[in-house]
Image 1 (cartoon, rainbow, N blue to C red):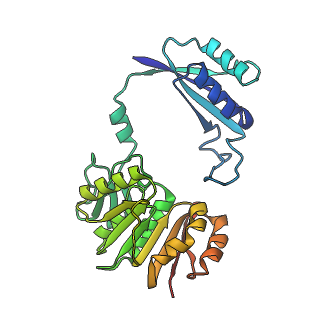
Image 2 (image 1 turned 135 degrees about the horizontal axis):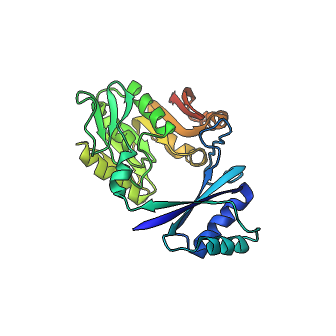
Amino acid sequence: MTWQNLSFLTAAAHAEPLCDALLEAGALSAVIEDADAGTPEEQPQFGEPGSVNAPGWKRSRIVALLAADADVAALLAAAAAAANLPGITDFAIEPIAEQNWVQLTQSQFDPIPISPRLWIVPSWHESPDPAAINLILDPGMAFGTGSHPTTRLCLEWLERQVTPGCSLLDYGCGSGILAIAAARLGAGRVAGVDIDSQAVAAARANAESNGVTALFADSAQPVAGEYDIVVANILSNPLRVLAPAICAHVRPGGKLALSGILREQAAEIIGIYAAWLPLEIADVREDWVCLAGNKP
């Protein structure tokens, strides 16, 4: 079976309406990409719920998947009309043949070295270093594969801070990668909490795959108690709102690390958390920071 891959350039303001119109007209999928990706003109886009961002890129590329027998000209005409735009005449079509999509997806995820002794290894790969601490983790619906800068920042911080037998809470655990890493690094009592029940299920499955004992719960089963280390890799908006709850889980003298924070948001988050404990920038990767501090 084959499909058609349609792509064309458009302005940022037109990209989302055109994507919606293409889907209504019969496209199987439609996405917006940065037409300048990989060049000096590339525009990173960061956002989260509640933030105000200009959507799309100045030079946006729409890529749509069409059935092999789709009438491209008619579909484009219908989409342009629905979006109240002039007809689209400059576009490219590329045939896409049937592939082993599972194998193709797996090929995009290789083992990730966090440090010389800590690796993240998809289950279908052999470990590059069997003597290292290898976290077996498959990409899934829950955030946290180790490839994102914020996850790497937290993993690197945990490797420096986890001591044998310490207790740890992963607040907003996603895939459970941080809690699992802490357990493999020697932590004792380990727990994680997330509002997403699918994330909790993924974290439990990942813990089992790694031979780790950890308590993962959703917001309907709140995790109680204080911990030696609390780590929260979420986003700045929930970190603002959840500051009292997160800090309440840090024991006196305990450590807190926060990530999912852009460099320009750091000062505000530090100011909010100052009511409970002092934070400072522990590390920076790309435009993201990890904040850390000790509770008095």
